[in-house]
Image (cartoon, rainbow, N blue to C red; front, side, top):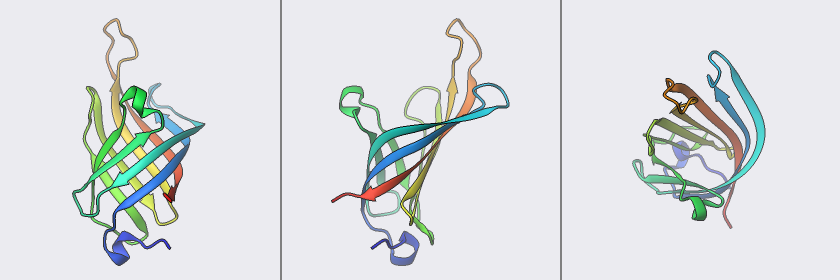
Length: 136
C-alpha cells in the first residue's frame, strides 16, 4: 500500500524505476526536444530527511555512473523528493520527485561543451520522466 511521506512520516524507500521519456532543453538555443527511452534505475533512499538518495542506472557496474541527492521533507501526494549538487565538472543541481502514483521526474542542469575546440558551454536542462515499482 502506498502511503505518502507527508501523511505517514518518512520511510526508507527501495524502488526499481524505468525512465520512459527524456527531454533536453536549450541544446539548441531556445528549443527543446524529447524522445522515448527505456532506461532502468535502482533507487535506494534512507529514511530520514537529509538521508542519501542514490539512483543507479542499469549497467553502472561498468561505468560507475550514479546520481546522488539528499532527501527533502515529505509533502502530501509525494512519496519522495530530493535534491543535490553536481558530481561532475559542469554539472549543476538536480532534483528528483517520486509521487504517490510511483511516477517520477528527474531534472538535472548541465553546462555542456558542444565544440571541443574551445567553444562556449551551453547551459541545458535534462528532464527524465518514468515510473517506479517497489522492490520485492
